[in-house]
Length: 487
Image (cartoon, rainbow, N blue to C red):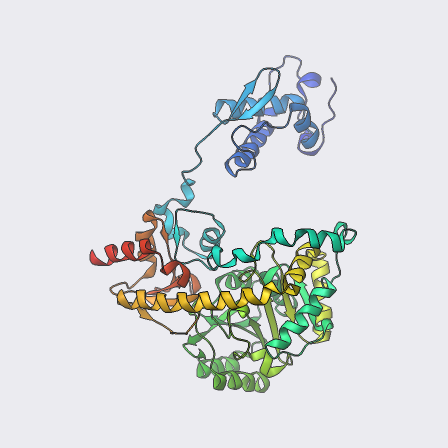
């Protein structure tokens, strides 16, 4: 058999059949090791599960452009490691290997090193049914269950089968943008479809704004404490990030004006309502003052509102007061529908929206029209309004109960809203919430320590972000009580 090498094999690794008639795998070994490591990782990640048949030798050889012997050696390595077994005349099958033990770099002993932005993002993306995720950023799944996507799939397919095989518009699915015009109108923001750009979630929206406005070395203002994934994006962009202290009624205005005078930043990223992580809401008086400062110092305010569906439409928003003149409004459906849909949007002036749509096309080509059609169908169904009523009722009840639990524990609560997914809490005798998180992790109670949300991640903080849905867990209460009683 003659096998033409290309891809990784093109660096001069001969096939057994052509260049190594002795049959001994010589230079193929490093390539085989890489292939074995790749398949082993796929098994560990659940791509291949116990009992699954691996692709055949021929299929893998053609897929990777490897010599057949390279694949044979890789399979032998997997067999030796106890990951797969050969079955005569049938192929290679994945064995039932216990992957429950976390990798060494995620062991609790590594917490002091790993408790950073990336660590918390990894924790948010894990599915641990036996863990109490007190630091979780999402509402409990059961709160969203009545908006099951399987109810809407057939309608999505029937209305757009042809378009679903192509990229969508650079602005995003037009009917959803029209639906968003009405939705924004409900909260007092007047916008046209040309002022809306749909994105792959609110995080892509922030990424586009950063790329457009902030070259490396520029200065930007953020809430402190604030939204930690935003901090990570700004660091990746090489942007100088300055924190505006967050108070229970919004940004510290004196600190904000001092930074505007001294640093002359172009942007201020903030969350007016249901602030992450403190749960606080901006007061009307402070909202007007922030907009006055933005006009005086030529500042653009980027208002992220991921929990808009959980708040009353009458709640104060900077973008509603300003009507998108000096504000950029970012929204999302991750918290109220499903994070799996990854549908967000930017609302801003029309000229900027066109530029951001071009940037989106350059960087990401388009967002997912299938997901956008799904959200549009969900918004247009009468069930959506009932869903919002239930969401707000559940959140208000959970917030009230969580405040009772935290008060019973003797915790200091930063802000006491009537409804918020997050409560920023400091527990008695706890000077560093990172230490608390490390102590509770072996009991699978996952906390979100304050330093993760700080512009300075080395700053010691007594505060923790607590999800009101998780605070209701009796296991959280018992575990924390036991820990505090030992201090």
